[in-house]
Length: 114
Image (cartoon, rainbow, N blue to C red; front, side, top):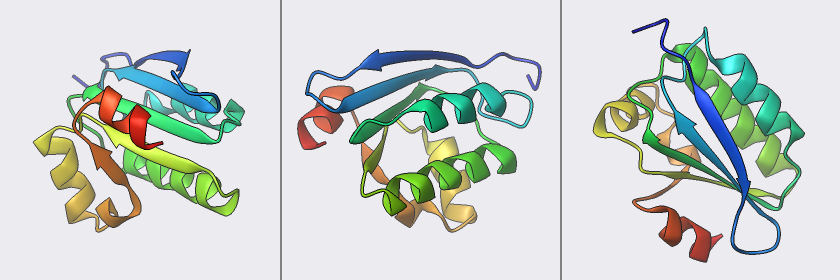
């Protein structure tokens, strides 16, 4: 499993200023560099990250998420997570960072809130 790729589809959201990253695969040390590059290149007002096809994250992946949160917060932009599995949510709880993020069950919910 650690060698599974992370595929990232970067698409505009339905509202002006929204960007959606559709992730498919694990967000782990071996796969996070492309994720970090996409987040850094994003300058939209609202970034929505769809985790519905992310089976797990490791501590490096969690660190990358926290880094994305910090960057967006300091610039006054929003960050939302969609479709986070119980396994990933539990990893965020155990590391005590889940309170940084806004969670939505579906992409349309996040898009209408952002």
